[in-house]
Length: 248
Image (cartoon, rainbow, N blue to C red; front, side, top):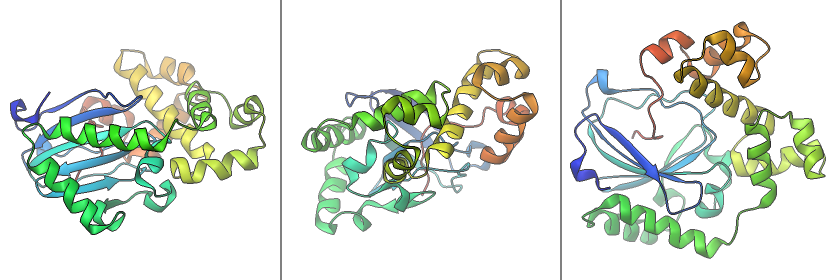
């Protein structure tokens, strides 16, 4: 799916050929009404907009892009997989948007930027770049995959470590460079995403809290406000949390 058929303000995504990743495209109008917060999801993105390649690091709170129009294409990596692709520990990019030329050699970044700039379908080319580099990086670390699946299922950090046969200290040490923060923060972020998905399916807030693993509805409300900056009702009512970790 190319970006040329995307209307201003539209956001679209599809599963990537890279396991666990998503490729997406968005045409921003630059109007304040078109600016939506990007919510923490444990992921990192490689993004392209005309003449630029940059990286969105893992967020600990909602990111509000500036009111800038333009076409954006991105690949959102499965939690824990982007640092291998980028060659940079995730915690160095936490809550940051960084030019790719600041992470890689300027010549390599320029070559890749020109390759995407010249493409008729920037989404396909950006995805191909990611697939090529992933093939060189080798298979994902099974411990990191276990951490994501266990915490994503609502298991505690202690159980996640025990099931993996490692100490909680080692789990934390491995999590920082992979996810950008420790397993407790990752668990909160994944629980937030799980709760939002349930609420959007029509569950009441009380049932959402219970199913997602919160102590009660008040706990859900506090976490949503702390991580997104807005109340749950406002977030869902306004359709906030659009995909893509974009923005200049």
